[in-house]
Image (cartoon, rainbow, N blue to C red; front, top):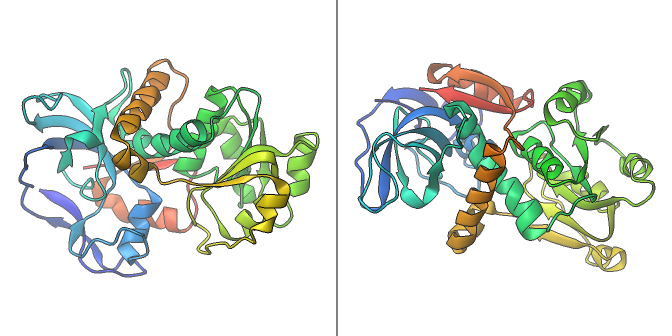
Length: 324
């Protein structure tokens, strides 16, 4: 079968190749899935460089998540051949066939395409875990979402709106503002460069943000500490800027806000019942038409480099989906 293999770690994708490899063998507890669509996530790019916290040894098949049809599953797993499923593991999704633990799969929402299902899982599970599960977002609250052109950022905007919050989408790229406004439909879009606190203050009438959702880190995190309302929450999602920020503890003490660390996958692994409930809630929202993932482009798997390079250049507004 065709699979996207990371043969060696490199900073320029030179260690990545599309190869023919044997089909994976299914173990007990796993589900064999014929992949119809698989979405690109920032950790996929980082893993080709050895820069993600999970560091598989090359060679390995890339890809966090996919959607497709069940080929084979254990009896009692809840899945049967022909079922339309979405989900994934830390690797293995960028292939014609994937082996995925049953606990990592869920039905594709009714009415969703495979591409939509592949683009939804990790991004919306992350957004829901952060905004709803950990921060208890409420109707009418102000939510500032950084990295709003990325899959997770767009999902956070979409979900916050579905929960009745007022959303400020933030991007570091001026040229993306119009596309973000069209795809995420936030209440406001701002440029998150330099001192953006004043823009947040003006929009919120001085109230600032009840929740700041930050996948960017670095300078954006530093300035975001000035944008959180008293009693608010600053959610650390990632560090796409490349710099892990530091903070003096007197700042959250004096300003009365909480810093919340978000690892949605690890949260679901440690608390499987909550993980299942989160997946069910996301699926219910999707089937009700209240949320839908933004897709930047759909590519055949052989055009994988286009997707990875567009992500590395920060060109995307939405998810890249590969079709094997």
